[in-house]
Image (cartoon, rainbow, N blue to C red; front, side):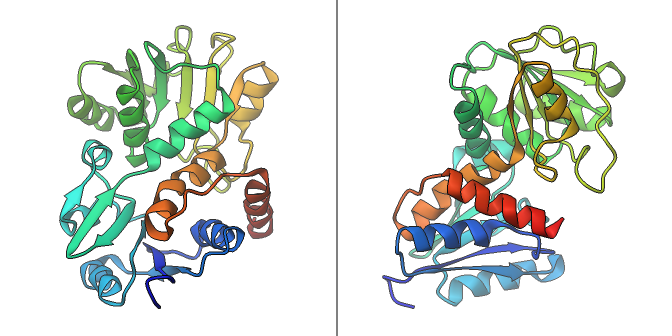
Length: 281
């Protein structure tokens, strides 16, 4: 490969489920860019060696996905602000002799939210987040950076939520899972960051009847595309944001870094991924 034909990767374990190649290969074709984007399956116990081999093989960078997002932070030379706040890296750039790590999950979430609800402002808002895993960290970090006034973190394991409160500070409140429906009356934004409601997982059991009618409801799950939570919210008149939009938008910064052009998230790309999801499920 020459400088005019860069190549990038997505590394994870397992990796067959990843839609990232479909997204990036669509953009490469759309913008007539000579380049490659490939899946790389790297087992956890071989990650360090496998990851560094990709740099030595001429890759300009790539994406890091489950379960390596935290592990890779020990191998990078520099990280951006969001990666440090979240404590995980999902985008890598090999630049000269340095490995630079960033996290675009928060960007993907907030950009999709703005696309779905352009009238909504994060500043001084009140949000409820269900879950306390890596996705919750990304959502918390970006909401705080955009001026959210209060975030109530509701998780089935209170200890994990308390750890995030300690990490992100006084604008975070912690709530037990049994009170998830009772805390919705004052919120402007409800976000499900758990896997509940995903195909093959238990359903998300929550009564959202008490939500403010102007509240936005987001679900990071995208299989199914419209979860039970989103279906109920839409039926109740709420603006909704699905998880596929976040997946698409989080890919934008990486593509620009590796291939030199900022891509657009289009209806055609979205339909392409939806068709692929339908085939696999």
